[in-house]
Length: 109
Image (tube, rainbow, N blue to C red; front, side, top):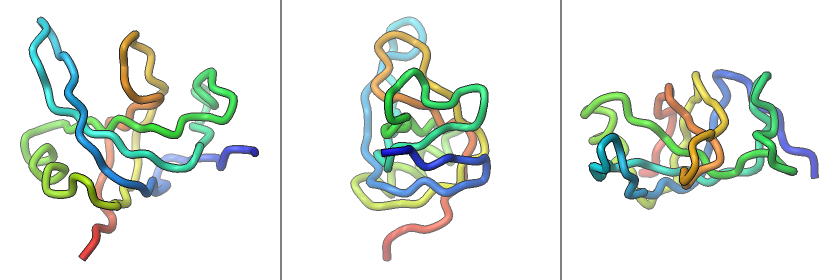
């Protein structure tokens, strides 16, 4: 199966879940994950050294407002417009790719 190419501005859809991760100095931080179909990221990332491309995307909240917005959508199917994405590179990351800039385009009723 060939992964669907992903361009900046494309929409990722899937169920949003919460992750507990360690931030700087071992402090716990909230993070979010969206599982979607396999995607080929824009160059130079491509398949992120995976056979089918990333399927799990860590959604990074840039501020408290984004964190609150995502917390309201936990365990629901959501669609996010992606404007910045990269392969996960740090050891121990729970997702295969990081979405650092995004906006919600649709939510469940």
